[in-house]
Image 1 (cartoon, rainbow, N blue to C red):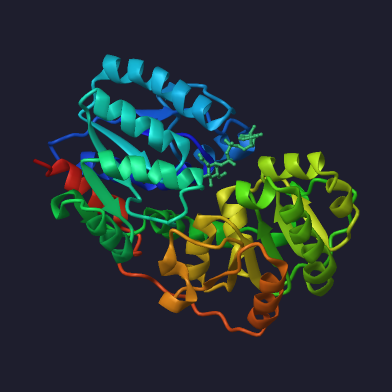
Image 2 (tube, rainbow, N blue to C red):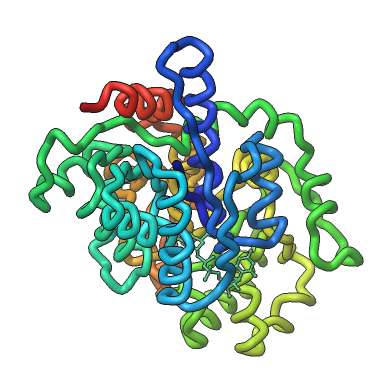
Length: 379
Ligand code: UD1
């Protein structure tokens, strides 16, 4: 049984399900799989769209948790999942990434004496104020199998005293999806993506050609929940970034809500060089990322994709749980925090940089197959 809840989970579960199907087609030792969706992300554009385009079979069980505080989301998920686990008695519960479903799933599985496996284990930002870091710590303390995406994650786990037999270095499952889907993304036309997703349909769309636009995504509470911090970022984007290049901004529901609450919405809606889009599908965003001049983001997944695509990326955070994506480890991204001086300095420096695609070890598109192999041969 695997549990998903929020957008970044869907790209990670798709290859896992495909690897199970592949295994079942050639082996007598069949795996029976149930997919549970907690319902943390429920908008069509945040959830169903990804199921459709990544060919994820419909979830077998919906918990319909919806939005709420962290305690509400984790608590309601635990209550609902406990019933599901008692009814179906899975041999394994699989959790992916660092969203609230990961925390809820870990605790519930172990209290029900079910084996637990964490895909994308061992990532550490070192910042315990991030809700995702709390989720990671809980999951990795409890999981029987820890599937790590890179060797730095192995070291993090060993330092925390995890026994080496529990750690399985399998690579980055996100890259399985990128490999599987990139040919579909390449067929899309950037101008169509923009006109189909633009929030203000009357807005005039500037010419979008390769390497002449910037992609922006923001959703972390540390950037968007504080009025002062968010305003400074907005003014920088408005006064400097969008003066140089069109800025394409697929806007996350949390960021949009905050802009409206802080009275910043009107600052950006009328600007001709900032294109506000609905949240995009996987192929759409991948297509736009491929030819972007630069990506400005606080998303972990985009940092990883930028590294493989070689697109210079400014990460608007002070820390990252994915150091392997940083330039100093051979990646494409640089941490700029949310201080405008720092963002500005790196922005202008990065404008003159060349693209340099890189592949950390085992980011080869076969991570899910390795995971299924370990699970089948466990014990
Ligand atoms: C969650 C994850 C984060 C992940 C991100 C990707 C946790 C702790 N955080 O953050 O790791 O990077 O998703 O998107 O699990 N909302 C909608 N429609 C939706 C979903 C959410 O309008 O389909 C609204 C909610 O009402 C809420 C806000 O967006 O006000 C934020 O949603 P929330 O579930 O709190 O977490 P994210 O910020 O999306």
